[in-house]
Image 1 (cartoon, rainbow, N blue to C red):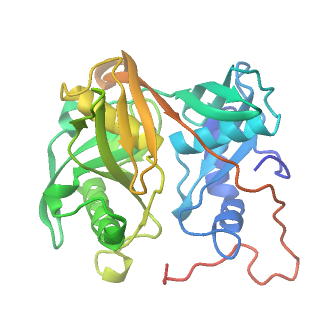
Image 2 (cartoon, rainbow, N blue to C red):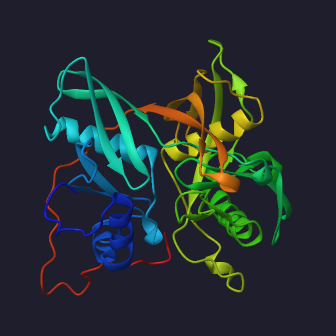
Image 3 (cartoon, rainbow, N blue to C red):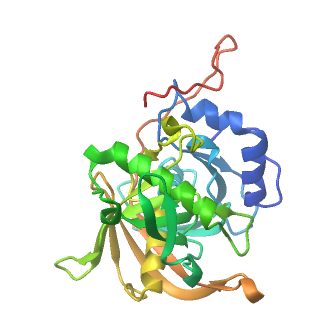
Length: 337
């Protein structure tokens, strides 16, 4: 959303995220719910930056009133839109600039050709996987005990080996992936809650199913994944609410979380490419630049600084309107999709 928004109060982009989540959620509903939106659609609200080093700020909004502190695929989309609409001047072959997410400053390096951003690399906020959040076992109705890691890559991810619960990452098994993924995530949040050491950001709030990593012919580490996102509030007494939706992208923050988990296990080295493929076959390439830490004192956590490389395409330029007689100014949802 590049125009038409009122001023959003807040001293930081995280404050602005909180304000929009608590007081301006009608904009998210207008854009993401039917009839203007569709399940799995996201919104990015481009705002004036707070930090002097940033070209623009942005607040990310997703279905079910989720406002991530950071999102890789949304950031790649934001960077592409800013460049290809001229809001950030494009310089070929490389344009570098900084944008401000709720989680902090995000460095962008975009390879540009013929007026297009053909490859976007973002240096994101630190990711981590604490030892106490590895090999967590939770009890899940219908599944029994499930082992998982919980890692932060911009959101708190439950990371689950799909084969361990009898699943494969196949579009034809989408409903099963959604059902069991949401159940595992909610069970993990209830039985093993986590908190960011610097932000008031509890979890886990999202889940990634992954397959075992393997080496490609060129030596790079590769894995397939799919991310399960909430689209309603799960109620254990109502099985019809045991559902969710699938991220169609390889997921930037999910890739960061998986890389943090792999690094914590000694399976991914600094400076090594990690090719992460989505359920529809699209790919991001991740890399860990360096080790760092997050938090202070007893809350200090070992972390890594990731980059994510991918590409986005502008699919439409449009103006969204609401007629004053429209009976659904905030849209609607129906349980069929």
